[in-house]
Amino acid sequence: MRVLVQRSLNSKVTVSGKVTGQIDKGLVLLVGFTEGDSEKEIDYLVNKTLNLRIFDDENGVMNKSLLDTGGSILSISQFTLYAETNKGKRPSYVKALRSEEASKLYDLFNEKLREHVRVETGIFGADMLVSIQNDGPITILLESR
Image 1 (cartoon, rainbow, N blue to C red):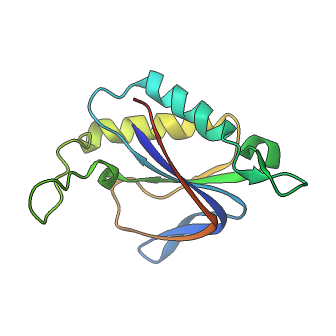
Image 2 (cartoon, helix red, strand yellow; image 1 turned 90 degrees about the vertical axis):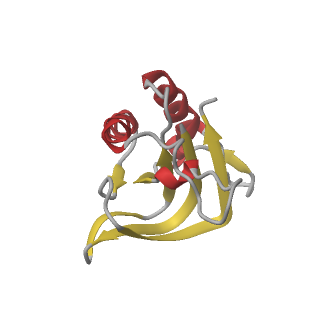
C-alpha cells in the first residue's frame, strides 16, 4: 500500500463537472494498493498519516499533526502509484491491485480515517479532475512495506 501525502491549503475533486469532495486546510492523500495489502497495512498507514508532523507550530516548525490542527482529508484512489516504468515508454500497472479488491480496501481505509477526522473523496475508478493547492510544497510518500 502506498499513500502520497500532500499538505494542502485548499483542494477539490470533480467528476463529470460536479465537485465530489473538497477541503480547506488539511491533507490530500493519493492512495494505491497492491497484492497482499490487508487491514494490517491500512491500520499502519492510517496511524502514520494522522500522526505525521508536517504542520507548523507557533514557531513555524513542522511539529503538529493533522489531529493537532483539526484539518480534513481529501482521499483519492490512485492505482498509478504502482506504475512500473523500467521497460519501454508505456507504464505497466501489473503491480496495482485489481479494481474490485482495491475498492474494498480503499473504502476501509477511508472508514478508518473517518473515525478521527472529516474525509472527502473522489469516486473510485472515475475519471477525476483533482485540484491541489500544495502548501509548502510538502509531499511525502508513505509505504506499508
